[in-house]
Image 1 (cartoon, rainbow, N blue to C red):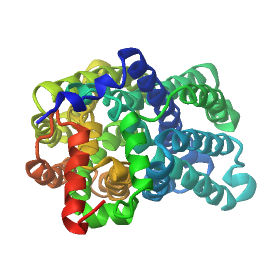
Image 2: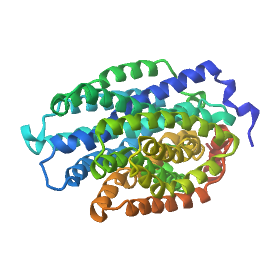
Image 3: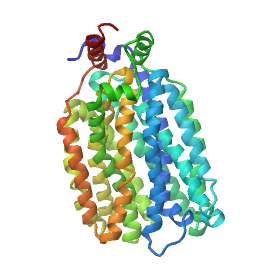
Image 4: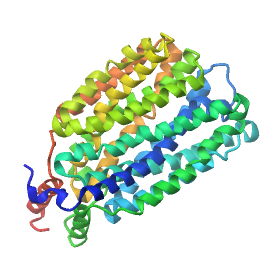
Length: 455
C-alpha cells in the first residue's frame, strides 16, 4: 500500500524530474545510436568488407551477426561490473563512464581497415571493439532507467521510466537517418569505401552532448539514503552474488520477461532488413526510409504504453504484448511480400507496437522487483543475461532458418516459442503498479532483521 510520506514527489519537483529524464534519455540515445548503427552496418557494410567473399549470400551476413552477438555476450559482464559499482558509488558516475567507453569503441570502428587490407585481423579487431561497446551498453541500461525510476512519483513511475526506453528508437532513428543520408548522397562504391565510416565518427559529437547533460543531474535521494545506510551496516550488502542469494526469483522473472521482447525486437528491426534486402531484393535506401518512419512510431508508442502501465497495470499490458507478439511473424512476412511500401511499413510498425507493450513497462517492473541497495545489480543481471540467448542469437537463428528452409514459417514459429517462455514469466509476475520503492526497501530490511537480529 502506498504511503504518502514515502512518495518521492516530495523530494523532486517536475522540473528536476524532467532534467533527470533528459539526462537518462541523452545517454541512451547515444548508446543505441551506436548499437543500432552496428546492427545495420552488419547487414549492408560489414558483411561485404570485413569478411571473405562466399557464394552463399547469407554466409557473410551470419558471420557479421556473429560479431554482433559478441556485444550481447559482453553486456551481462558490463551489467555485473557497472551494477556492482553503481550500487556502491552511484548511478550517475557509472553512466558518465559508460557513455565515454561506448563512444570511443564506436569511433574506432570507423577507423578499421577492411578484410582486403589486413585479412582476418579486420574481423578480429571488430570483435574486440564490439566487446567493449557491448560492455558499456550492458552498464548503461540499468543506470539510465534507475536514475529515472528512483526519482519518479510512485503512481507515475511506469510513465516517466519509459522515456529512457523511448530513447532507444530515437537513437535507432538517428542512426538510420545518418545511413540513409549517406546512401542518398554517395555512390555505392564511395559508401562502401569510406562513406559508412562517417556515421561511426559522428558518435563523438553525440557523446559530447550526452556526457555534458549527464553532468547536470544527481542520484535520487532514496539511493543516497540507502548508500549511507549500507556503509554503516554490517548486515546489508550489494552486488550480483547478494542479488542471486536474496532475490533469485526476481532475477529469473526479469530474465523471462526479457526473452520474447528481446527476440521480437531484433527480428523486427534487424532481421527484417535481411529479409527485405537479401530475400526479397529490396533497395537499401528504401528499407532504411521505412525503418526511419517505424522508429518514429515506436518512439511515440513507448511513453503511451508506459502511462497505461500506471493506469491499467504492468501485468495486463505485458500479457497483451506477449500474446500479440506471438502472431507477428505470421502477419508481417506476408505483408513484406506484397511489395507495397505502405503495407511493409505497417508490418514493421505493428511489430514495434507489440514490442512496446512489453518494453515500456520493463524499467518500472524491474525496479520494483529489487531493493535499492542491490537494484542496479539486479535489473542489469536480469535484463542483460537474457540478451545472450535472445537478442544476440535471434538474427542469426532467423537468417539460418530462412537460408535452410527458404520460408518465413520457421521464423514465425521461433517467435511463438520465445513468447511461450515469456508468457510463463508474466503469469508468475506479481502486480506492482503504484508501489513505493521505500516499501520495497522496508520489506528488505525486515527480512534482514529477522535473519540477523540487527542491522
